[in-house]
Length: 342
Image 1: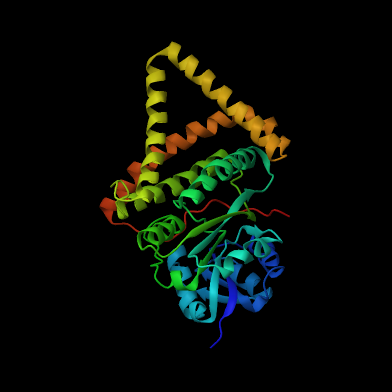
Image 2: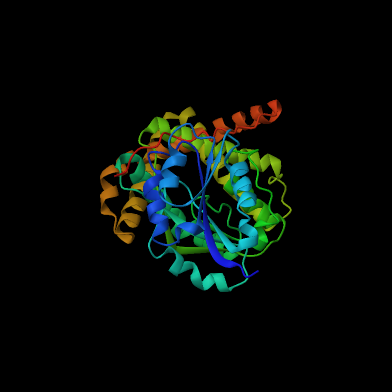
């Protein structure tokens, strides 16, 4: 049987506020028959809305967890047997109209995974920081990781897997970041190259409040620690592990700097001033480079997010340790509240 080129798989859990525009976005790039939605025990109208869009829908009666829901959909629809590539997208995400055009040259090469670039919607303070954070990450970290072949996370909203590689991955819901889990597996099993394509853009929804932002980064960081424990990434046995250890060291040095500064009021003033200056200069550079000058308005509050990120990273460590001791597996996604972006 001749396989079709590519399909899109969208896992969804209580996404009635956002899934319609996400599917409309996908239908600009894919035929409805090549779009697959798995509703993971949703209690709202997610499945009905997806069905009205004319796409394939698998409504699971009980919540399984994002990874397990993806795995069930892949098997139920025989995606690996019918397609050469599978795009993982999210119900709150919208693909750029040139997404497939920009990744097409790489579909003819031998790779395991193509990673797109994630961008924020323009909505207030949190999205302003995310716009800055994503742009800085793409410009420096993602491009450097791509060159060194140590990309740490293939985001769940913008990743294209070859069916050959995906068939050798175990998609589970035993951590809160299944996308990080799959990326680690790809490295450890040496399934092939992971390619970052900055022009393959995906816009995703950000939390509306600092409370929701905290909830989201705690979930991401908890999942990060869970995978660090699961795959023993603290052992310096590979170049990928070394990259993760450098990222951990970076967070540790920031924490130590904050603690030492708090113990010395004079040092705290100098540290805060230096941090503030560096952030403002970076914001001015990114805002100019990306032609997104609107984020400058919110820049004075950006240092607050760095403190939140550090605090959540180490709070998540203890949360992950507790979950590991209790042997708990979260299947409820722990996602933030969705909102209409019309």
